[in-house]
Image (cartoon, rainbow, N blue to C red; front, top):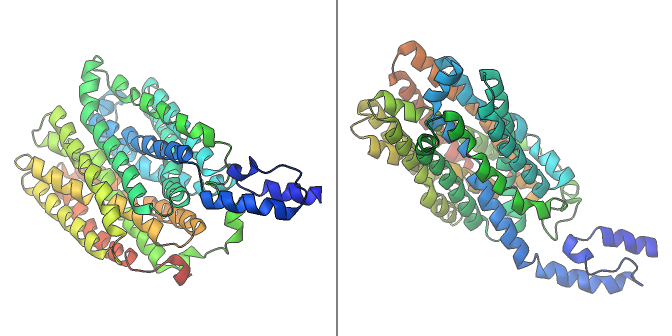
Length: 436
């Protein structure tokens, strides 16, 4: 009997094991505390800690990319990069997200989501510290890849953590961290150039300073490093108890992956190339960075509103069409009058880029279980980022060979149509469990 009781104790969540003695006289005596604790759920301070961790993590999921976009010309000159090599550099983020995002579910099952996100923040910090110190393109790419590896696993696990810790608030919590992500994105775009000037004009200092914010994001996850269950009440064998889903059989999963990939293509082209488009049109470097910041800042309020609206709708197709239409108008303006209507195009493209929080929300809505969300998040994001890899590279090649921005902008606008089609498919009222 003691051996059986000890085994039962080990299967309880961390909050429960603290109150259950290791030698209980009878299994029935442990049942009441277990039920009461499960009903009570996680403690408020722990939920607050997870919320702080989500927000700080989200703030760090884009500065490594948008700070580089604001200083791309200086980095090219400093490292003697061609336009083609710069195109490769802008394709590194989705490549890393696709490769390392696949690893996130397995790592989360073995070490726990909190530990993996903590390791991700450490990787981001280390990569941002090393990146300005290297002297060549290869070292710069390697350090960038290390930071992007941390971003990749955290990208995949954000919807998972929300689904597990806040199952009754998926829309609002997704909106909260999406808003923080947009804030970090726009902040890096807006202040990188001024900070670089304040730090002596060195692009290395302007890029390296963002390691400080990444280091702060490590702290909230440290108490959760040893929690391998994801949330109280989630058994360690959670993933093994759910039959394996053949997710590739789901049309919704494929639609969501294509929608995610095409919106990521638009986002990374925007972050990597839009400041340069404005600068080539006669806009100053500082103003071009602010315009990118405006584009990213549109996601701050809308990233909080759109998930809440989306969770109240049976299908999310109308939102997909609205966002895509804004993108088409923005690209048309960028082609016809890039400098004259710069602020309007920045606003419209910012609205269009809010397809990202919508995609994250649909990941949480298109599965009934936490295990399903893990698989869907990994599949949609990894496949989606694979789809997005050629986009930024193609823009660089087209720009280099055409000598202008007409063809790249036409490519961006053309990709918006299949994005809307895929989004309508992904937004239908069904789950992957139904289709698998």
